[in-house]
Image (cartoon, rainbow, N blue to C red; front, top):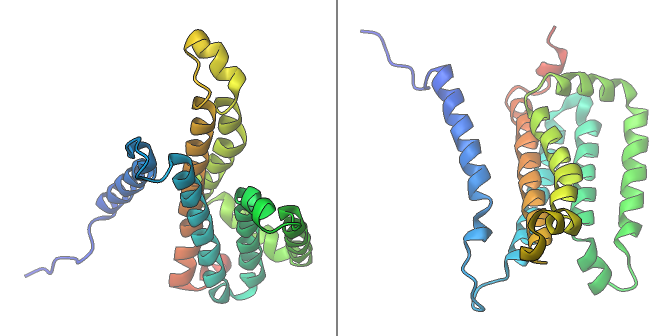
Length: 212
């Protein structure tokens, strides 16, 4: 009597993964469902906290994966520091306001310089990783995150766009709300892309880079 495989078929697994990621993209926007009451946190603070949490988890995952990356350890560590730089930029206002006279730029510049020098010294491994990443589906999430953060959030988060669209019905709360949720979705995509880069490496060490 044939034994049943404990794992679902590949096509079913693909569908389940896609549904899970789509559900996560909807669930990550849950602050929009918070009722407008004074007894609950303000939506903008919840969104900013979630953005920071997603970036922090992505950075932690990259740092945790680095020891398993073999010769690409420095590349993954550099990606982790780049994610930390995104996190610092996200909470830059809080750093500037609460740790005076420290400015978040004082933290960003050394991190970016160290990361750039590390990747330059590891040019061969960096180019090899770029070749791997260009063929990996996770890169689509990273690209989507960059587009959301640096294109769509700038357009749909601008006052001029909504003033021209709504005219007399314009509400000044709309631009920052749209910008915050688009940035939150971008952080979620960064997490998905990070998982896509790290999970196979943890499972198979660095064979993926050396396989023909």
